[in-house]
Image (cartoon, rainbow, N blue to C red; front, side, top):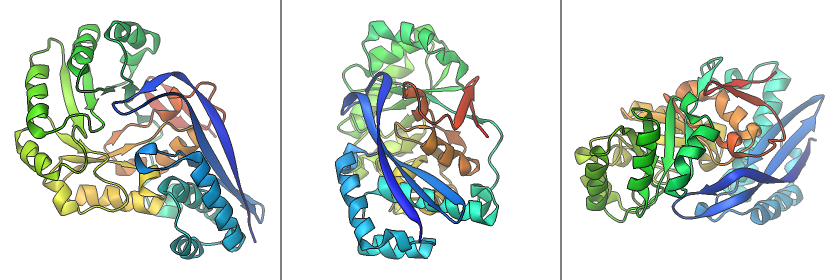
Length: 335
């Protein structure tokens, strides 16, 4: 029998985190712990409103799992069987699997990546750094205050109304810096995205490297029209959760941003990254607004990705766990 617990953490953010569909200055995440036989494991759940997740829902689901026999789960097949009978949100599924995998790896005397059969992560992993949507007049000061230039890739959150103005200011402040623009499904159709890209190409100092999820996931036909016409690679995010037809995705995008919270577990995340590469797509590993618990877990499988967007813990004020350090735009695991 193992001892499973869950704890809520109310996280203050260092600045208002605004994307095209919502804004927040706090975030409530949950940490699952499992302990027994002198070993322990920890996993994080970062609920995502885009998928109908909330802290309250995840706590209710965890309580139901406790009643259904979570304490008897001592292996991944045990966990799979329980979740098949009692389905939960993907974020909670990941937290449970991450905690159990850490416990199993500790019991086997192996690092998590080795226990999972993943290649060893690099000692230092470069991460993108994200800028939330903000007033144009705030951009230059934000970039300076955050020392954003130390990151090799900047991820710019945009909406349709102000996207060009934000990019113009970024290009003026950091000319030539590689940018990933993330629309979070803000544009309505392929033609509006193409117009945006034409206008962005004329902005001085702008180096647009990637464009992430500009249209709603439901706009598959628009993506098929956009893909061969886009001057920059298109990266899928909301269009790929734990289930995806990769032959279809390959006709819509050039790459996939895999997030373990969306995938629902290490194993599914690994499978998605490998399928991404197998279909000739660019594998990217991303995150939600997470503490270093979730980011450390992502680092375990980071060697499977070519682009890393793992800055979620840098948004958290007074991050409580200290499992990951960042220096010069690169991440390292703390002992």
